[in-house]
Amino acid sequence: MRRLFFLFVYNLFFPLFLLLALPSYLIKMKRRGGVGTGLLERFGVYHRSEEEEPKGGIYVHAVSVGEVMLALKFIREWRKCHPEEGVALATSTSTGHEVARHAGLPHLRVLYAPLDLPFLSGRCLRRFQPKCVVLVEAELWPNFSRYARRVSLPVVMINARLSPRSERRYARFPRLSRLLFSGLSGMGVQSRRDVGRFARIGVDTQIIRLTGSIKFDVLQGEKMAVRSDFRAILAPLSAGRPIVLAASTHKGEELIIAEAARRAGAFPLIVPRHAERRDEVVRELTAAGFRCILRSRGEEPESVGDDVCYIVDTTGELREWTALASVAVIGKSFLAVGGQNPVEAIAAGVPVIVGPDMSNFEDLISLLLKHEGIVQCSTADLAENIRYLFDHEDEAAEMAGRAFNALRIHSGATERSVSLVESCLKSA
Image (cartoon, rainbow, N blue to C red; front, side, top):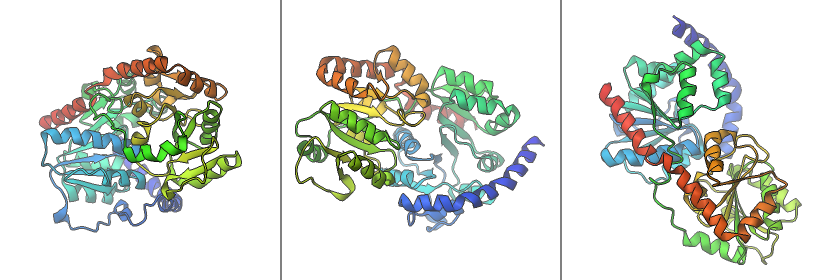
């Protein structure tokens, strides 16, 4: 009865929320290049026949770029045991959709996830007829979960984590939290802390398995080779100076990191978290005396100097650019809240600096600080720490090595996540 009442209230107010949010959402999709990429799939409009769709495989749901990258890693591991099986990968954003489409995986159907309305969720799952639904991280939609439950479809959440702040939010509504998670057949979590946090908000401990983090499973992925075309772009611009990567930056952080790099005698390589912010980033840096070179325009400076910086305003290339960095400075940790994922840099053997707020990666940062595998500092100390790492190359390399070794605890997380899904399928 409680479940039906909750769904009634949810389906009463969620469509109203959608109507209010739709204009802003469509504007964002247009700005990010989503128009013309199949966006109507979110509303249940498909441009290919049902006969063309992969059926009987797994349906993987990932929200944006970060989750899509994890989903692709999971799918590659899944394919080792299920090489010919079709996979549907649903994403909610145009940037995630673009990354998935360009991944080059065979038998992969990339689509936009349907809006969580009763008739759309059912229409989507009937279309693909998957044998299992895999949710990447704690992404739950009531109507989608309800339909999967009605047709006895196993739903498995992988790479799940719960921050202290999210735990407090769920704990305010314990009955509702139990309802939301009750449809899961299995849950793979990143750390022992996550096991306790999910148990405290009512998730059945019988379905929870400690798998580790797919994000931090650096030993399972292929080592990133340096791209010669990327090196050829940076070589004349940097003019022999060490390269500081400003990774996944948010508003205002590009200027902070670029100025710190300049004071340290380094070349700033900037990869904003959202490529559509390019004009705003260029304005701020130009006002501070920088000459900005945009990757999307293939520009070249008339002359090279310490006022030049390179802005990567394209999607899905962060990993390749990271391999060329001397030091990586992680965004969303100086002026925004939560931080971005530093693992790509650690996997590439690049020394990492983060700002004061890395609360989205609390367990990881605690682990890295414990092993002295990362530098955490304020804005005021950023230039000094960059310069120190350049001046003490051996010490910087040792720090990067300690960071890599600290992540060995997560080695095999992708494989364990695949095993979890397989075991839930057997139980079903």
